[in-house]
Amino acid sequence: MVRSGGRGWYAKVLAAALGVTAVAGLTSFWNAQLGATEGRPAQGVSAPPAQAPGRKAAPVSADIAHASDAGAHSVNITIDDGPDPVWTPEVLQVLRDHGVKATFCMVGTQARAHPDLVKAVVAAGHRLCDHTVSHDVTMDRKSKAYQSQQILDAERMITKASGGVRPLYYRAPGGAFTPYSRHLAASRGMRPLGWNIDSKDFERPGTSAMVATVKDEISNGPTLLFHDAGGDRSQTVAALREVLPWLKEQGYSFGFPVR
Image (cartoon, rainbow, N blue to C red; front, top):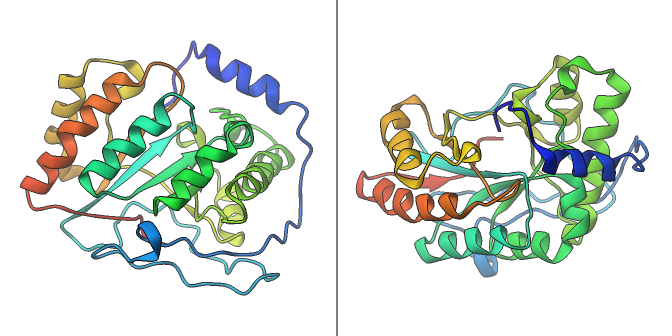
């Protein structure tokens, strides 16, 4: 999500994160996430290669990904900051209604607090993304030790909450990437993930405004940014209900970000 001030919710998350200790050299096993519910690959979406238990995740590119793995005329739906007990189920229902898979960029403390929702996201065929422990949008101005703690602890929290499914991407809060954080995440098998279209839903500008933003900026690239936590996300849910069928009407398919 974009940088923004006045987020009391994140202050609470940050406070909750202060007791989290750094985790280095994490060797959790890799369980490949499927591209569709009940293990059936979604059309135009390839599942990541499986990795044997006990092995480290294979490194991926440290370049920030924007493209879709489903081809040139496709989009990636990405959902940030959850999971949230009120809004994540609503977002999941909209995605289910329209047969769309998404990438959920989860805050570590939220994943730890709501493991049932993390498992529900995975069970529905969506992919996981590491969005750090406490969503600090000033990470690019912090020490390497702090960046490492935020990324690796969140990876551990999300993997544990999911029942062993590891995040495949890393999205820096507010886009606060550094060369160090990108290469650290990539070495853990998490592709740095950017976005092309910010729906501005965090500002709650109204459903119509969010839909108009997507329609006006769809030529900017395939990766769309929405949120399922951090406050009232009813406008986001309503916007997704309009945006998803509109994208289909324009001939777009849905994929995952490239890895």
